[in-house]
Amino acid sequence: MSKKTFTLTNDQTGENWTFPVVESTQGPSAIDIRPLFAKTGHLTLDPGFTSTASCSSGLTFIDGDEGILQHRGYDIRDLAENTSFLEVAHTLLYGDLPNRKEKEEFEKNIIYHTMVHEQIHHFFRGFRRDAHPMAIMCGVVGALSSFYHDSLDIWDPRQREISAHRLIAKIPTLAAMSLKYMLGQPFVYPRNDMSYAENFLHMCFSVPAERYQPSPALVKAMDKILILHADHEQNASTSTVRLAGSSQANPFACIASGIASLWGPAHGGANQAVLEMLKQIGHKNNIPQYLEKAKDKDDPFRLMGFGHRVYKNYDPRAAVLKSSSDAVLDELGVDDPMLELARELESIALEDDYFIERKLFPNVDFYSGIILKAMGFPTEMFTVLFAVARTVGWISQWKEMIEEPGHRIGRPRQVYNGPTLRPVLPLKKRPAKG
Ligand code: CMC
Image (cartoon, rainbow, N blue to C red):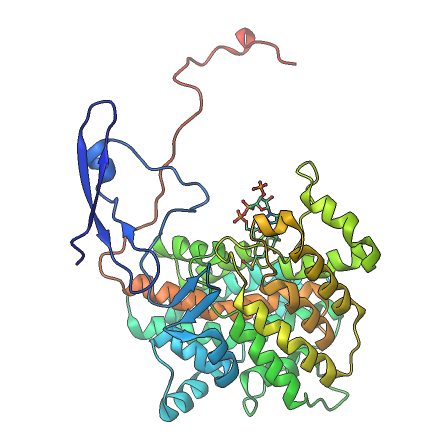
């Protein structure tokens, strides 16, 4: 326990209150203000959570100034180069990279849970064919809680573990089904003899009439994309999952809430928005005009795939993706003018004072869309892929929260700024408006 404290002074009365500091192992420590309201009668106000740690967590560390991202102490570049997605999933869920025996056991646990209840196929048929796959994902993932009653007791550690395995295993199956449904093709059942990434590609791209075998380079690229999106500290969707979970809601419902939160273009929806923006820009000659739009406060246009709440140097995930985009495009034999346009846009924006002063750099979504497009995914699927990977982070964060002794329901307060008490007037006496 830290001996450091902070003292708060009421400038009007001169009263002082002292609060303990909770030390971190790396990164900023926090002033523990839990007794603040009881002691002072005042709340703190921080609507975008720019100065608020909502929890303590041992999963992911980000240093935004240095462009560092680590999971359980392992650097993201090291993980992306030297491990598989399921090894990263094991690390997030259990705290460490698996040894050989643990790896085999974990992979078996996941790969043998990839099928979904056959009744779920009927669920899909209720959606319109032109439904956005994220809309389908919000619905079907929430619906999992109506199929797997035997793992809903959140106080039973074994049931928590089974739910976590089920979610990690079944989310690619549901994601692939949402793609197939959109395309009007038959659902493809998972194959237990394939790796996680290979099976996902198989379920997305094979059709019963033809043999499909993704190249090892494609499988590796898919696996890397999944690793890079696996977890990212207390972002909007993870905080949503934690808040939903704090009310003791079941894990399937919590993950569905995370998917809903991820969908927005300021968060996971940005990867789809980047491609739409590049299409809109169309040619490098139009870049200056769009940069002006992005800088104009009266114009809602923003440079999608640029900026981050925490990274103020470079998003390390974008760096890994940027360096692998060439290799992937070469392997696929794709010469995408969008990549050229994206690179040009990045280099012009990075020289521009507006972006320099605000420390706006490309984030993970800037390059992921280009790679996913080259792999053959339609743009509507980009955020779904993000959700597949992030399910690992969400469920690991949920598990960490439930297992923390003394955790309580998340219940923020507010500064009320509405009307004060007033009487209800009879209808005939209420004033005319407009
Ligand atoms: N284009 C133009 N201006 C921007 C951009 C952008 N992409 N991002 C931030 N700014 C400006 C913003 O207008 C503000 O300017 P000023 O100080 O003059 O008012 C300043 O930079 C700070 O921006 P902010 O909105 O206060 O920053 P934030 O931390 O609240 O928002 C963000 C972070 C990621 C939502 C934002 O940068 C953004 O909207 N980026 C585009 C969407 C995007 O790429 N999202 C993916 C994020 S990474 C993956 C993920 O989280 O899922």
